Image (cartoon, rainbow, N blue to C red; front, side, top):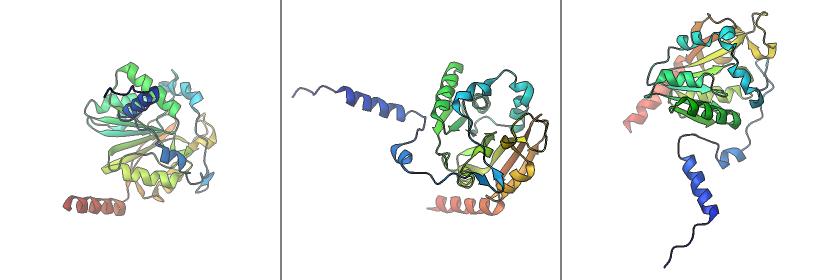
Amino acid sequence: MAPRPVSLLALLALLALSLACHGDRRRDASEIEAPPPPALEEYMGRRIARTMHSSGAEWLLRETREEEERPSRLFDALAVRPGWTVADFGCGNGFHTLELARRVGPAGRVLAVDIQPEMLVMLRQRAAAAGIANVETIEALSHDPRLPPAACDLILLVDVYHELGHPEETLAALRRALRPGGRVVLVEFRAEDPAVPIKELHKMSKVQIRAELAANGFELAEEFDDLPWQHVMFFRAAPALRAGAERARDQALKR
């Protein structure tokens, strides 16, 4: 019997399946259809800012950013090691992602997470142009970064946390995504400093950051105060949660 000709529709379906199986994680139909919980407008007395739109992405790559924010100091303070898995949550068009990918090296990987697919397209284009192959993009849900469990040595949020409409759900997901000893790093413009030329809604104080993270099972591990405009605060899972995660891991290994 002669083989049937393959229709154009079937070829397109095969192509879509092939693309879905090569690294980047996009939202599937069930996730798109399932409504997220209502987003908050305030959290613990703080108004939540709106997410920066992808139409303003070029501002993230402005030539003055090193002078204004000293990201080179931030990268050194993160002390990322070769072979690590690092998540850049709220990665935008990849200003931090590409340098993190260089620092973790070929044996490591960077999970670049953003809720806007347009940002991820820009990031993939920039990574390809730079010859960087150890970045995996993840299209997040508003309440879930969709990071794999116990996978990350470090999760970086640069000027992102104050925009999260589902802080409790998101922080719970970030805790689950940490490896034992892993850290979540928040970089936020200083609300304590009126000279920082950023709208107040896009600033946070150390007191507010510590209070919100503590309420969601994190403890402060370290601070870095040598950036011109921003706080850098390192958090780890609180002891009780770490102990519970270790017990669950040990039980799973015995099975």
